[in-house]
Image (cartoon, rainbow, N blue to C red; front, side):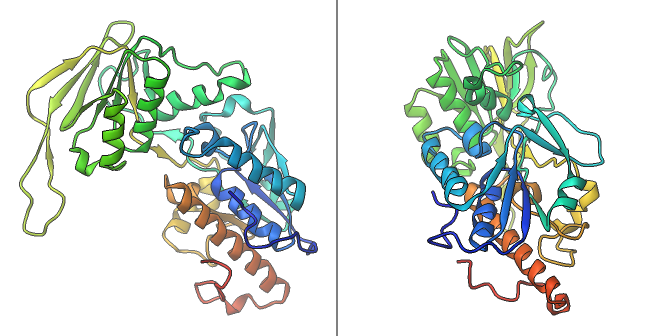
Amino acid sequence: MNFTFLCNTPPPKNGRKVAIIGAGPSGLAAAGYLACMGYKVEVYDKLPKAGGLMIFGIPGHRIPDVNIDEAVKKLQNDYGVEFRLCTKICGSEPMHEEAGDQFVLTYKSLGGRVEDNDAVLISTGTWKSRRLNLPGADLPGVYSGLEFLFPVRAAGYNISGVKAPDIKGKKIAVIGAGFTAVDVAHLALAQGAEKVYLVYRRTRNEAPCGTLEVSMLEKSGAICHELASPVRITGEDRVQGIELARCRLAQADDTGRCRPLVCDGELFNLEVDIVVGAIGEIAAPPFAHDLGLENVRKGQVRWLQMTNIDSVFVAGDALTGPSRVGSAVYSGLKAAQSLDQWLTLKAENRLNEYKGELIKNTDLP
């Protein structure tokens, strides 16, 4: 892993300073690009270690921590990138709690970063999980995918308020069939769960994670229930089970569209102690309204990936919603290139040359 792949050695400093908010794949990619352009770069993140969900969400067998650590050290030691960790950047809107907020020691304002830098790039990722909308979803023992994964990955930091779920010997139902669901199931098995069920309303052929991941999960000991949809979570003062309905795929229409799902079949129960709704995350930057992110998503902008505030850019999952690491990296590179070009043309009084796309795109694959 190398975030400064565009240059072999650090270039001379260009006298410009940029703040990057978020040290996940998008932010680190942008930091590497801008460091190769000669910028002084400061990266802010609420977590105690750079890497974002690559460190605190995605299991190490997918992306080894040591690879991320070495790439971050190269940014710091060779290119002078400064990391301000355990620091959360706030806008004018009320803050909401997200995974990882337990690590925050310092709060800084977005306005202050704008005043102190030539430009700011926001790449805060997706730290808010979608919740199951079911009867019983508020019972103790019900988690979102991130609520389940994050504490286990963060437990080594001994932070008060971060407690990993008690998994050993438990029966666990995981709702969903994306990579988060698969990661939750593998983690539960590795932590000694007695039984792990993967519940998906379609078949493995439609599973976002792919059929290979489902097959590997079964070989590890999980039980997969396809064409099953949760109806309600049962229990008195804690989770004791989950009721599911059999589903079927209706006949496809002449257009070949994805067949609609009908879940009106037989009801059946699983006795479980924990239910994990791994049904995705959403981007929830605390300054979405200030920045007009909805307009940026629609492409209704004056400059590629620039927000309502001049000199403030956005990249990665904070802009697009949940994506894969590669997509987040590419978005960070594009935003960094756009930021660099905007500052350069602004200094030369040539901003009127912008025609909706970057003037040159030779530095990106």
